[in-house]
Every structure is written in structure tokens, then in C-alpha cells.
Amino acid sequence: MLNCGALAGIKVLDLSRLLPGPFCSMILADHGARVISIEDKRFLSEGLYLSTVSRNKEHMTLDLKKQKGKEIFFKLAKDADVILEGFRPGVVSKLGVDYESIKKINPAVIYCSITGYGQTGSLVNRAGHDVNYLSVSGVLDLIGEKNKPPSIPGVQIGDIAGGGMNAAIGILLALFAREKTGKGQYIDISMTDGLLNFLAIPLFLKGITGSGVKRSDWFLSHRYACYNTYETSDSKYISIGAVENRFWKNLCDYLGVPDYTPLQYDDNRRKEIMVFMITAFRQKTYEEWESELSKLDVCFAKVQTIDEVLADPFFKEREMVLEVCGKDGKATHTIGVPVKLSETPGSVRTPPVQFGENTKAILLEIGYTDEEVMELSKNGVI
Image 1 (cartoon, rainbow, N blue to C red):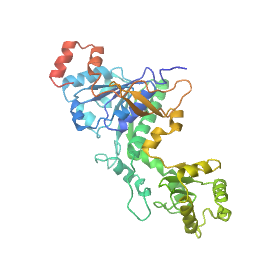
Image 2: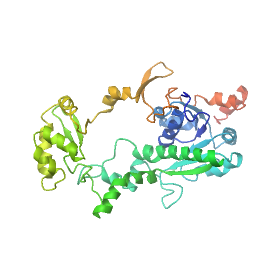
Image 3: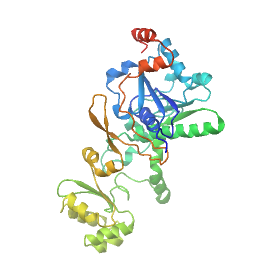
Image 4: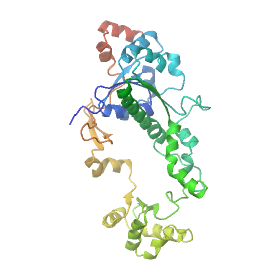
């Protein structure tokens, strides 16, 4: 087993900010890639540097609008395997650090751009955030209560799943292709494109029924009692996901209503069954339900808060909630590595890097002297 990770020896330059790009480069760093995050120090004052996606990385400050800053970037890019950026379309071209410019000095480079709407199409220049990409893709319309406005989810689905994860997949595919062809390539990741894949089941059902699914009113979203959430007597919530009839039968038998088993998706009795389930689950605490239902083959789970997740022994067993010690000696929680490889496992090796922490060390590594580093700092290049 190699402890250095599957991507050991891969060098990544990450010009992105906020969440999508840094989440992608964290995945690469977790699996052994050397990731150097590069930002202009003026972004530090905005308070948007996310330490939660900054582990296993190096970070340097660099002003790409200055010629000296661009020269430094080109020195770093000469032997980079991957360059990642998340600016609006056209920005890297104006800066002179776009794919075509880098390819001239490094033909094998893999260059990935993450944007909201992609590098082509009528929305190419439109600004946006997660809620906008969820909206355009049709995903937001399926989130929330029936006959009420769509609800914005409390996590960034577009940034992470639509952007960061797809970018990581694209980069890995390009690295694999380069092993066979020796050629680098450009990757265009649109967060909105990525979110369209979330419509797989709604699109399937539309093909069968001829009509689209509606918010909180289809079989995988609150319409039926077998796939729903219920409040317990201690104001906790439990989710039931008994889609298959065998799971639903086990639940109905246990609750003493076997007659409901064949009525799982009966629209005429739907409301009656729902009222029964709501009333039944309010009779006991969640812990009582946990004790009873865990003995049955029923799809159920507690709706947990973040604090409950961090304290859950299950995630500690899976090494998905870890404690890392920062440079200040304080221990903080971090999320573990979800892709678990047997021979080349990923790992959390270093705590979140501080903004600009490695600037001097990286410059010295590529040949600058202490005096030159001081001059670059004085002139605002770093």
C-alpha cells in the first residue's frame, strides 16, 4: 500500500476562489497531488477564504495583473500537470494566463475552467451563484413544500456536485487520457450543466407519465407515506424510505396496520395513511423508534443536525469525521476522504493552510533569492 496517494507526483496550480474550484483541488490534494493555491492578497480582506477546503495544500499570494506576477506564474506553470481556474469566461485571457497561452510553454498541461454557465451559450456572461444554477437547471423547482415557493437548500449543491466534483472527474479523465496520448487538453465545466444530471429520475418519470414531477408531490418527495419525514414526540425528525413494498410491509406489520401494505401507492387512501403515520410517529421519542425499528428491515434514519453528525460514532468509524490539529495547537473537525482506495488511499495529512503561508518557500524553490522576494513583496506582486 502506498501512503502517498494515487496522485502523488501530480502538480496542480489552483487559481480558483470560494468553493467549487477549491473543493475540486482538495479532492486532488487528498489523494496525493501537490496543490498550490494562488490568490491575490486583496481577496483576504473579503473574508471568503474557506479553511474547510484548504487542507493538504500550499498557498501563495500573487498579483497576476502585474508583469512580475505573471512571470512567476509562468515559471510555476512550466511543469504543472493541472491548472484550475474559476473566473468568469474571458478573464484569464485578459490576464494572459489562459489555456492557449500556457499550452505554448507546456503542451501537456490539463487546464480546467469552472463557471456557472460554461464557456459557450447565451448565458456565458451572466453572473450567478448556486441558487441561480439550481434555478436554471430545474432542480430548485423540485425543492420545498407543495404550493409554496421553492426552498433554497442549506448546502451548495451546484458548487460542490455540479462544479467541484465534475471538475475533479474531468481532470482525472484528462490525466488518464494523457497517459495514453501524451497530450493535455482543456476542460469546460459548467455548474449548471452538472446539475442537469440530477434530473435523471424526474426525466425518466416524465417519459413514462407524460408529465413532469411536481414539488413535494411525487413518490420520492412527500406524496406517499412510505417516503417521507415525521416528527417524533421529542421534536426530532425521522425519515422513512420504504420504497420497496417489502420494507413498507415490515413497517405496516410492526405498526399494526397490515391492511396498508397493498395500499402503499394508492392515491385514494394516501391522505388517510399519511395521517396515521404522522400520528403514530408522534407517540414516541426518536430513541424509542431507533431501538424498535433497528431490529426490523426498514429503511429509516434520524434527521441529524450538524452537531449530531460530528458526534456520530458511525462517521468516526468510517473515518469521515476527523480532528486535525492546527498550527495554533487547537483541534478542529474536518470531513474525511469519502473515496476509499485499498492500495493508494487518500488522507488528511496537513491542516488547512493559511492564506499566503507558502509564498516565500515556493519562490525560493523556483530560484528567487531572499532579496528578490522582499522586493516582490515591496512592489505588491506578492
